[in-house]
Amino acid sequence: MGYRSDVAAAFYAKNVEDMPVIKLWLEENFPIDTFAQSIRWFAKGMVFNEENVKWYDNYPEVMAFEEARDKFIELFCDDKEGAVVGAFEFMRVGEQYDDVEHDVRGDYDGVLDCNRSISISA
Image (tube, rainbow, N blue to C red):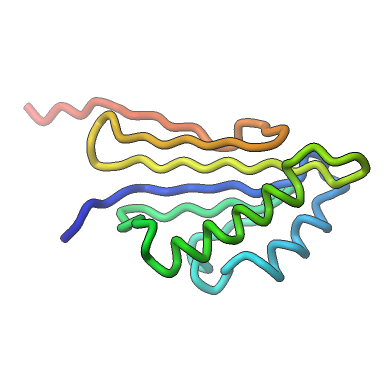
């Protein structure tokens, strides 16, 4: 069965007028085919989310995601004069209550949020 997580990531431009550059880059560099069912475009970029998945560093799809993420951060989130300003957010929520990973880069807007709730079955 394996350990399962819910995963989400957002790649976006800080300003909506820079979105075409971000979109073109993502279409050419992000493994869209791998995550096609989970991708949604919005005004400034792209988000994807997968629920109940095995998110292991040695899985090919995770390695492809991480390679694209690293390139995106280098190109758009590092402070370079005259560059398109982008943002990246990642969140992984594991099965255990204290297993939450949150990573943000660039001038981010807080597109991703994590909420846990209590369920009572009595």
